[in-house]
Each structure stands twice: as structure tokens, then as C-alpha cells.
Image 1 (tube, rainbow, N blue to C red):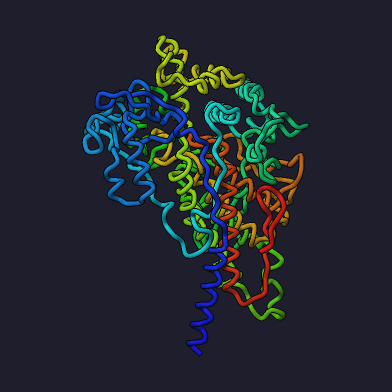
Image 2 (image 1 turned 45 degrees about the vertical axis):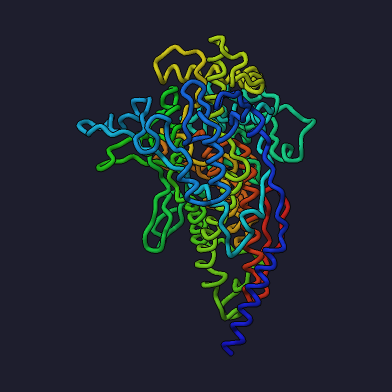
Length: 612
């Protein structure tokens, strides 16, 4: 009997492995920017034409203080060698930190990096350490379930100078300018600041373009932002999946709680029961301060200065720290700065379980006990879904690491902003002609209708922050002192994990079920203007469903990184789609391990559904 069971277990594993092996590994195609932009340098007495890596991720390598470009192309090549080999010895051979002092004894340019204790009275002077890259070899690992990290892919990222990237950069600038405006006012279009930003975005060629789009571009394309009757800007800075444009901007799963043990609280209290304990959906309130708006600070961060944890918060950290419901984009940026990556989806699962939202009709053990004689628990029950919704996260991270490091190596928005700023500086000083920054794509971006209006607003914002009169400082105001993480922009880890985790939840729960956290599916909660409590509002168009609010949750988390300044819109949507494919593959393989005859109908981010 034991031997028979052993053989059956082996056959199941082989069948799952064969299903995984049957997936065609696609071609992985980058946008070509890495080799496109060139420069001529003198090496060993000869003029050498080499890539400048102007449109590539180079953070952490030594950079030139004048141009902001990587000092030496061989440093980038060593970086790529380590990525491709996965050998820790190759990573250790890659230059890390500024040219002066390197990783061990870095010499910084900015006062902030020279002393990260400057704001602590009486504290000893402490220079910033160098920050290493994050899991650049993760895409080379193998997994025992789901698609291989190389078996899923993303289309090429929008290229430098394209209408789409110009619009994406404009949108990130716009989000930085509105970071401290409450979401309710952004949706309503309240105030001159919001209207100015919307007007600039609507002037961009991308949002008015209809012809000549590739299939990938068409799948990401959005129209101009217009107000709906009584509904405000329902598509502004939102995702493009079903449900994203219905109801409040923030998903109910980031605001409400559940009833808790013994009906201890109301969902509008914002407490989520973890068994007999509870957590609070309110977030720590960060001060309205932006970072990396001076060249020396930007330069140090690109050289790897570790300035993490230097942002400021309201309230005494020990006695009376301030928390509130997610009210502004900065609150959302704070959430995605420190979340446990899958925590929003684990919380959503607990809310759905606590509210007894039914599972997908194809899942067994949902009838009365006197009929089924069995309840779901280890399989088809709470522990099953709670563990699976987190299990897919690591698979998503490995797949997106391959896209980030091995394929695309896309520059972050903070760097593209610096490229525009430095181009303008060289042009103003008469140094742009024949320089390494003499790139027509940058010139076209600067002059693009819509973006040039936002650049003026950004320059005004930076003058206010820095108390200077620089008319052409277009550095991107960042929500975090350290800027982006130490890995490339495309794809996005948060978005890939969001796509995978939300797909699992939509597979298990009845995705068409009305979401009635505010009493019925025509009402929802939004934070009070000060974020202290939740208010109930009527939904003007449509109604809330489990699928719609889960899709919105995924978009909130992914686009929350755009609000912080560390990602573009295409990072969000293409990564979300890839995460979905990872989760579907895992579900297909895991279905082979169960004896019960069951099915799951999973709605897809781009519409339609698939049956597992």
C-alpha cells in the first residue's frame, strides 16, 4: 500500500512537471535603448565608440558628476556579467559606490549623505553607507511549481522619446506635484493645482493618439481624462482593469476591517481580526516633504548612498505617533514603502473570510454539513487560501527579477528626470552640441506639449523646496530620501506580486459577489478629510463587486509606487499581467494534486475569464 501511494505521488509530480515543461518559453525582447545611445571616449590612446547607457539602469555604479552618466562602460558590462552568470564572485567584482572611495570608504557630495545624523541633536557624525543591489541573480533560480521564471515575459518597455514614455514621465511628474492632495479632491478635480495638471496631461500626444499603435501599446492606451456627470475624474491616475473606475479611488480592502471575534468591531472601524488579535488599517503619517531635488543629493543616491529611513513623520515616535486611513497619495506611497509585499492581499483574504463571502461555485464543501459531511480546511478552506495567496509571491518576484535585470534594465523615473534636467543645463551653457547628452529624444520630450507645462510646474516646486531661483531644475521630487530601490524599473515587483496574489483570490472567491462592506454594493467608505475615520458615500456609477475591488486593490498598490516616483504606468500594467500568468500556472499544476472533481472560473485583468 505504501509503495502504491509512493508511485501515485511520483506520477502526480511528473504530470505537473510535464505540464510546466510543456509551456513554450517565449522570446524576451528589450526596446533596444541600451545599445542605441553612444559616446566616444579615449582609451589606451584610441577613440572608442561605446554605449553611454543613457537610458539604462545604472544606479549603484560610479557616475560622472557633470553628466550623471555611468563613468565607465566596463563597470556596466561587469554588472551585466554578474546578472547573467548569477555567480556571487562576479557581483563582488562589479564596482559599487562612488568613484571616490568606492563601497568601503565612500566620499559623498551632499551634506545629507555626509552625515545622516544631522537632524539628531548630539548624535555623532555618521556618513551614509553604500547600498547594494537587490537579488540581481534571482531570475536565474528554478522553482518546483508554476511557470519557470523564463517562461513568462513582458513586451518591450516604451522607448526613450516615444509618445508613450513622454506621457508616462509627465504622469509621474504630475503625481509628484499632487502627492499631498487628498484623493477625494483629485477625483473631484477640486482646486487649481489638479485642474492645471489634468490640462497638461490632456495636451500630451499619447492621450490623443489613435493610429499607428502596436498591439502592446494599444493594450496600455488610455483616453483623455474627462469628468463624468457627478462622478469626477474616474480614470485619473487609476488602473485599467475591470472595476478600477467604479467608486472611490482607494479599494475598500485598504480601508475597512471585519467584525472580529464576537463582533468586536464594525468594518468601518478599520480593524482586521487575526484570530483573537487585530491589526489597524491606518498608516503612519509622513510629513509633506520631498527629496532628491538637488543635484548633489540625486548624484549621491545614484552612486548608492543608503539614505533609507530618513523621511520624517508626524507625532512623537515613542509616545504619540500619528496614524490615519489612507487619505493622500503620500499615505499610499508610505504604505507601499514598507508593506510586507503580500500583506494587502492577505488582509483582503481575511476580510473576505470574515465577511463569509462565498467561494467560487465550482469549489467543493460549500453545502450544509448534513449533506457534505465535510468542511473545507486543509484543502478548500481558510488555511488553504490564506497560505496560497502568499505562496505565489516568491514565484512572482523571481520571474520579475529576470525581466528587470536580465532583459530590460530600464532606467527609473528619477534618472530620466535628471537626463532632461542635465540636457537643459548643457543647452543653456552652450555645451549640448556634440556632447554625450546631445540626444534628440530628450530634446523632443522637453518640447512636447503637455510635458513642457509640467516641467514649469516642477521647476517652481523645486525652487520652493530648495529656496533658490533655478528655472530649469526638473529633478523629480521623490517621496523617499533614497529614491527608487536598487533594481531596474521594468517590471515592477509590487505589481507582479499584486497580479499573482489577486488572481488567487479571484479564483477562490465568488468574484461576481456584491461587496457590501458599507451596507450594500451602491455605497462605499472614504476617509474623512483628516483621515481620522471613514465616511460612507454613495457610488454614482456602477456598484462594487469582489472582482472590481480586488482589481482596484492590485492597481492601488502598483500605482502607489508611481505616486512615490519610482515606477511608470507601463511597469504597473505589464507586470500585473505577468503575475496573473504565474498564478494561473500554479493553479493548473496544483489542481492535479487533488482527488476532488472541482473547477475555478478566474476573471482576467484584460476581460474575459479562464476555467481551471
